[in-house]
Length: 216
Image (spheres, rainbow, N blue to C red):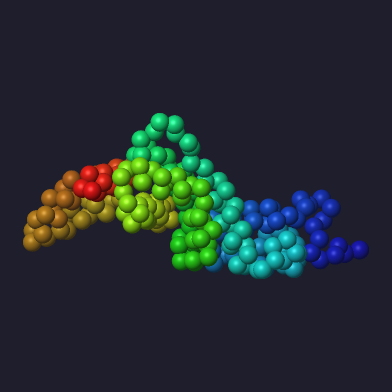
């Protein structure tokens, strides 16, 4: 007798919301947001597509909201007693980037969806970042701009994970740059055959925040 569609076989793992979201996240991580659809997800789970709606009402939009909640539940910024504001910002940046690096396709999709941005950024970790920036001596507007720069840097750096650049490009540019661009030649001469470190970029941002706070 054929099994009823939408029900897992008795030897299958039970279908739950958590299992659905974890499978959907794996699809997105491996193949991008475009790979996320109900039929493909149902095939991965070996169930009828309607079984997914029973656990995640609302279709793909509800799945995406669930994925954001699942991913950002892993964002845990350590509490550093007696830490400087710079150390607090670095702790946030490393914790946030760990999430971005693990799930770059989803994070990039979130940035263009206001509802998902709300779910991702209105949480305790954002409070910790803002607290650190206020401790630096910034006002409300400056805190907002500084936090945006930090998050944008983390997103931008993650592009290297999605689309790694052939680092030999620097050697090629050194060979072809014209003498008409002496400053470009000078800069390229200092280029090293490796990507700039993650912390180096953060250091530049922190120095800018320090200068802004001192100016105030």
